[in-house]
Length: 158
Image (cartoon, rainbow, N blue to C red):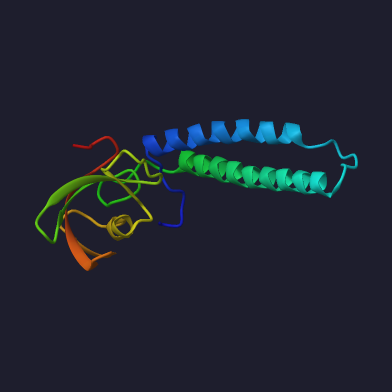
């Protein structure tokens, strides 16, 4: 994106906060199953203990990543209104003359067809562009273009 603190949409923040609650609960459960440092039984017990310790490391890494992303979003300014950024709502006209209004987000919501993640081909192509500009991006069918018709900030979805 732009290398500085990136804003985050309200939907992405809520999704990350829900994931954080779930991860912390899972971490507490896994941590409670680890032994207190005494020698564990046979090799199978030791392997199981090692697997739980690895899972704890994975959870700690993801929790730290989400915490860092939320802190970064706290210091970032609001989504831009003159150029496409994370949180922007963008109306585009595709090469086949169809139009769509999408929101650039960080976290894909399975049921939200209007959300385009910032790291998708369309999302990456849109970032930093203004209304009236033509973008080019790759699709499974090949390279294509779209015209940015208009953009707004978070919450301007049609």
